[in-house]
Length: 503
Image 1 (cartoon, rainbow, N blue to C red):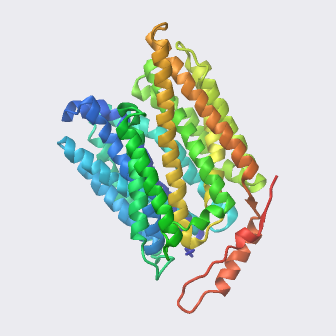
Image 2: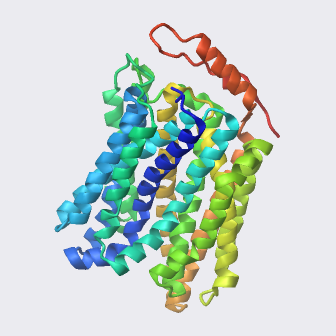
Image 3: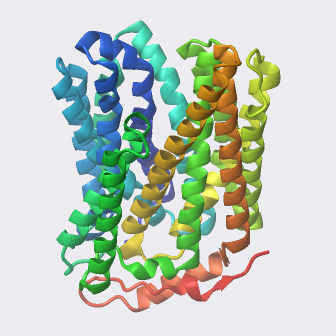
């Protein structure tokens, strides 16, 4: 479905959609700063406090594929509005929570609403902007929101917690959610699902959701329970078994939740592998550098947020215009490769930062390189992940790439945190506490740099760049010519036939 609305209204719709996505992205990090206040107010123990974060991650990571497919079946606009409503109501419950159980349960509902919004928002944007130049610009805006939102969350979390209370990190979502809902109703035309006549693959949905939730639980709980402990290994084995069962179901069912043929499309497969590695590197940057600033250099939460501002401003500059121009001029490969290599250089810079480092010498250069890398690379990754799929599969493709980022980030962070902790433990006997911590962070940064460098090479060598306007125009013309009398548009994969290798 292509939304036939005028240019100005289309860009206003993009702003509103991105505002909804920003609300979801912010919520993944804004809570971290307020955790000590939440623990003191509601009596969380150190062990139980992690569920304020994990409950959200569990349902968010587990339901992305399901949310994307529901959008394809029943309409992306309808699912986006439903997800925003659920997320906003859950935010109200979080802000009013006066017990541990209520807060954790509300966070789980928030995660489900956030998964639905994240899974279908990318599809809505791709369908709003079909002209290659406009699509690249729109994806740049979306990429900036996704890449920079986490850093903004740290700043907002510190500000709201310090000035008001932890309740307001959730209550602030209420006016935003209401405004996003009302503006989306006004700006986005109603549309039916692309796959009318198909049924939801219930068995596939149940197995893949259970598999992802078990995997996320094992990952986020792995550092505490032990990676070689029986519960962790048992859950990982169960998650793998459910994934195998899911693949067998998808190979046989008439209307699969995830058509396996999608992964025969080179750009879809490559972009998702790059997404996993890139997310692992991004999580290394964001979380480990925040720990370095707080625990080694002694920054307060507000100072940590301000330290990320240079990277955010650079990402804004590239994502809101320059990245789109680079994609239109050089295709997908070169910007992706250069951006990820710059990010790898930024992580490598942090990997040599001393325990008594200064902001100008040891923090700012790394933040600058990482801002440049994220600003340049995020747009091509998202465009590549969605470039080969039909409109009827766009929600699913969006859910898959979001799942790749989620799982890559979760696995990467767990692995890097374990490496850092092991290195810190080994250094504690011979180094001061700050130096031992810093030594562990160095290992995490270096590993993240390797992830980013491998992702750069993988994407630069294997991605295909499509011909731009001609291919899109041919696809639209063929789609219009083959629309049947029921109003269902059969959109051929014209873009696959017009791919060229872009060196």
